[in-house]
Image (cartoon, rainbow, N blue to C red; front, side, top):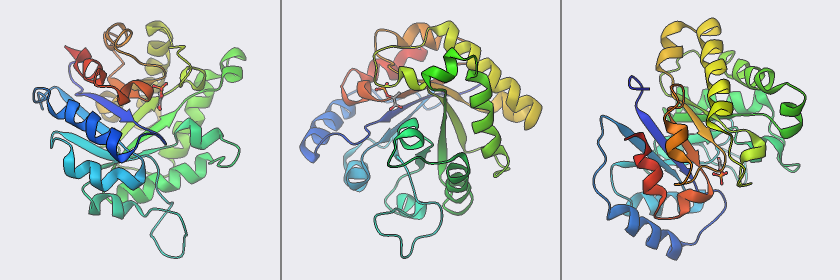
Length: 253
Ligand code: PEP
């Protein structure tokens, strides 16, 4: 929508090498400057490459973590304190990605993700891309909106300032599968999310909060999705590791 700035996230997940990142960043850096009044771009490299990517990536693309620890650092082997993200020039973290919610070795709960969001927002001062979305069986049993509302409620119970929160609606059956939600399917859920925010958080927050769509977004399907009134941008996995990611960034035009 015209009143909300379009946002496109690129989630590189657990992919790429230092050399591949250097090539990809060169391609991104060669493109024209963004119109800062119209669009934001946020790139989430694997944590080990976050600092080095920040150092080579154009300044008008922000950097995000893909996950952080629930609170302050200390004796938590293998974890990242959210304040370390800002220390190396990152401004964002993704939280609640379906791969972290559902992978059997991770199984992050709504409560854990909400706790991470609170620390990242309130202590580290990061922006948070909070992912929600239903499994295929939840859609088939008619529970899509109920699942998204449960995930939103966990966040709303924990944080009060929504100015640094972006919601990413990512139906799990569409992530990394090549099976994109139709613009109508996505818009229906985005509308329901905005209504939920209006009823449970407030009208101002509902109007201002960006709701991104994620799940097999590509240069070929992004324009139709971007036309929908409640789709305010994208969270892109596979297609964010190609120079043609820039076509998705431009899809608001
Ligand atoms: C994602 O990583 O959040 C995602 C939507 O992946 P893909 O675009 O590859 O489906």
